[in-house]
Image 1 (cartoon, rainbow over the protein chains, first blue to last red):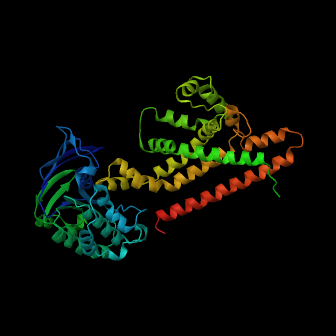
Image 2: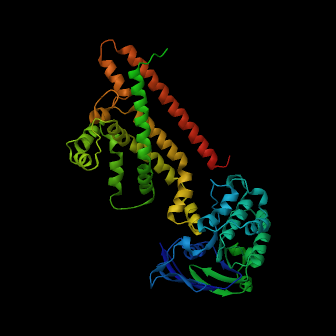
Image 3: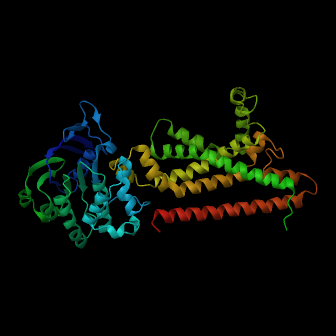
Length: 228
Length: 231
């Protein structure tokens, strides 16, 4: 379980958000500028909140009061970013292996094969990220995050850079990921359709505040045409 | 055709050795300072930046003279190094390495700094979420991505070191077989009546070496860039 209660001043924008995420897929849903990515970066350990607490499965990752701030590289939280951020100088195979190298785990060909099959990226292994399509790149990015054996997976608008047809191609993979990989996910999106398909719980954000939490039925209140 | 005397060969090989050792010795410092300037904000940053660039704008003779009054045998640092470690730079080829390295340093730092600044820092963030601490993410992401700039910096530094004259002759003089580089040998020959044909030989050698260094640098940089972008 992830418990987040953070405050951060970002120029004019003040973020103060508190929510909990249990297993399954929790969506952080809101318009651009609602503070979704800022929250993800704080959970990942890439930016530091001004105040507050972040606890994952009983381990305090950040606590302003006791000055605890576990660095990103020790958090074991997998991230899939909007732009993929694959390492351009490494092949797909080495991108996938990167997390394992850094954590010093021995090669596990079962896990590798499973993730490669789940995401259908076996034919891409020897290519460089520069030679991949947008959809392929995002699938590899998901695989890279999964293979580090994360305790939690953060997906920050992983489909935002793709056109509608490509989004449709990738959504089934993300659904399989949610159902088969057994890693709790936080899925950031401003697109109600995606969230409806993927999320088990929804945290609504607006102007840096949590406005509602609950099941996907919350989305029926939010009008797609406004947010999408 | 070229008819090089053994003294010419000595000067050529010495030049290559000095330039090579100066480049290799400057590289770790160059990468460290370039990273510092590209990535950190600290008190005195513009001072450090100015200090690094100083040899580029100072007359080389001044740089050489400054080296002489700090690292010379009777100078404070020079005497300390000689007494305690037996390291002597004055009038040795190692002193030429120092002066060439100092003169080449700004060019090296500039090239490496530019390439580090061009790297998307979000890739380093991605590396850290995958479990890489700062040192590992630097070694596995930043350095490989900066490689074209590092190669360019080394080639520029090598070429600069090879052509160095003013600072070197001021600091370690012009001793055949010890500190007489191609440039110094050419200078000496042009001072002797009838030395021009011999000087011309060395001039041709200098042109060939410089051209080869340029072509090699272009080739290495292109290969490194192609590797980065998945050819």
